[in-house]
Image (cartoon, rainbow, N blue to C red; front, side, top):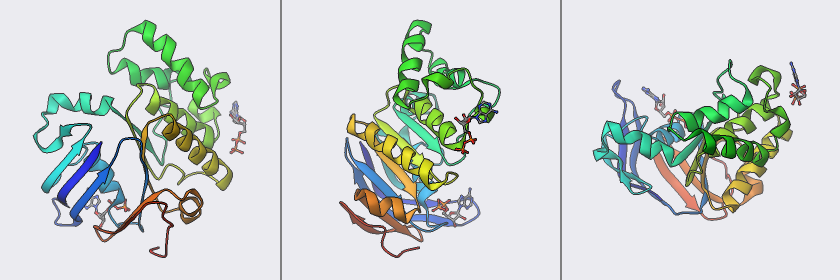
Length: 228
Ligand code: ADP
Ligand code: ADP
């Protein structure tokens, strides 16, 4: 599903964010990418989404070799992945329903399919009754659930989340983590970057620890450890 082969990333200002990354994430896996702030977690996810390009090495996602992927093929790559961010990134002037539908409209889905999938996706995150609300009328936890509904509406094989609980209180954080686990149990590969020790320790999932751009640990059923 995801493979990094000898990947390094240097930003134009000279900062080397990742060095010699070798990594394989299989279909159906649930993996945490952990590490302190600045360790390279977001950069790794940005390479996966082709928001940034590797300076060296190769990233392969869903069968796409990203270094040779043409610009016009990026939408096909992104259609196969859902993305969730710390700051939710909902469109403030659209309702919950419209925010989720928008993810389907930009991939040119037929209206009939949109009318079928959006309510299913909202039901999956338990927000059917908030379909007509606007993001500012929702709590943080609810906004993140909308973001997850939007990420899942195109039935992606891969869900990527960058600090999805970073703006949430512990109770809402747990709800989001539970939801991500359910999504994974339905067969979606889930990759979550986080520095929340309590969550990682409780989940006992795969832990890929990054420090200063290097993978320093990769464990099945891992704990957070003491990197932070
Ligand atoms: P994390 O997500 O673990 O906090 P990042 O991947 O955001 O880490 O950052 C890794 C390193 O790359 C840091 O030193 C950061 O300052 C640097 N960095 C991130 N984005 C850029 C950028 N666009 N330009 C230059 N340096 C960057
Ligand atoms: P939290 O305690 O998680 O921060 P809030 O106190 O913001 O949550 O909201 C509690 C409930 O009230 C949520 O279900 C939210 O959707 C609803 N709510 C909050 N603000 C509004 C609003 N302006 N209009 C409608 N519903 C709202």
